[in-house]
Every structure is written in structure tokens, then in C-alpha cells.
Length: 104
Image (tube, rainbow, N blue to C red):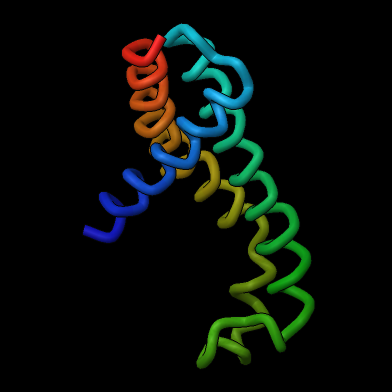
């Protein structure tokens, strides 16, 4: 249920971004939306997971402050960004492409 709501929310936000960027075809909307999702995933992995949470306990989730070893597993976070991260990014990107093509 939460992922469905997230997909809907991201689809709306990304459709607005793609339209503001000038997308008029399915592939333009898809590329813009997927590119933004990749950027968000990269920020989440490389900055939040690898730097912030791994090195600053004050930003960690409550109850996980003592899990230093888990927070420093870079390969684990990178795999999560690729699958399911990039795979799930295809869903809102395809929806954005569809909505852009219907609006055009």
C-alpha cells in the first residue's frame, strides 16, 4: 500500500517536472522522469547512506544507532539502489511518459 502511494506521488511530481522541462512525447517524459529517479537514488545511496547515516549517529533511525557495521555496508546499499531501486523507477517513469503523451 505504501509503495503504491509512493508511486502515485512520485508520478504526479515527476509529471509536473517533465512538463516544466518541455517534454511532449512518451520517450521525453520517460527519460526525464527516469533521469530524476536515478539522480534521487544516487543522492540517497552515495550521500545519505554512505556518508551521512554511516558517519553521523545523530541522523540514524531510532534504535539503530549502535549498528555501525550495518551502516558501513556500501555494497548492500549499492545493490539496493540498483535492484529494486532502478527497477521500480521504471514504473513511475513509464507512467509519466504515458501522461505526457496523453497531454501532448
